[in-house]
Length: 394
Image (cartoon, rainbow, N blue to C red; front, side, top):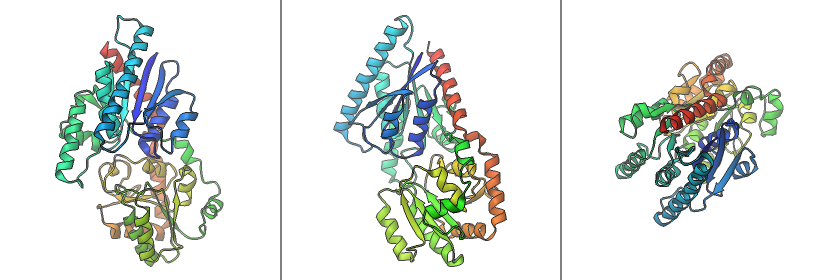
């Protein structure tokens, strides 16, 4: 039995967190036992506590912000936890072979501290998944260099890296974070059938959200934080509203930028036409209500809302950043415009609203190519990688 220990900073509502929980919940129980290590707070903690397929350990000192004292405490806590896991595995497997333990880290802080703790504790296989980097071009140069240096340091403690996008894979190789032979492309998966099968009564679902089912509805599903750049969605919505008088808009998500978004809604005169739904766990119910899915992120890994919208048969309009072209084929499954070009995004949205047949064709094209984002495929690929790396370590 292989013990797979996933370490992630915090179980907030996001793709990396949902990806991790799905993997742990669907590992082959005859070959793997799972353990989740994370902070005790977050919207998905209840999901982790309720799951019966894996154990959970909470480390309260594991936080996203750089806090040297708390980070040192977290490193000590993680090292102690992993040492116990290695000792238990040796008792179970015998002292003659490396213990059957794998550490798999996610997110920047857990990726640094978790990989360091794993090496100190003598874990034979250490894997890290890149769901997008903690550094990006919009940071101050000194800050960006610092985070790149940390990733290079952590790479010394890493046996293998998983990238969810080709763009992140190529960037990591170019920056010297890992060698090409030590990285695998494994897409962040979704439960495709869950999104394909939703929306049988669209009119009722639209009414339940507080909108008129006879009018077009455009939405963004994202956390309200600087990376997702939600104010640009409001600006684009205002331009679309001027061209398509009946258009309605929603944002599903919440976060630190909510006050800025609310202020832009008031400034744009969109009160009553753009609703903030707050955190939603029923993305599969919201997507079929939309005529167009929009994402105005300034940098990304590979957001799960892209394949979710593809599976639901909805066209996408997004900024052309990082891995966006790997999911959204410009002119085929949706449209991509330059980052910050909310006027260009608005023009593309208006085009789709004016031509429902085009929108349906793009949605159908997305459904046809969403198979590479299948969640079961993601888990099977990870299982094969776990077994290969552990076999090679022995």
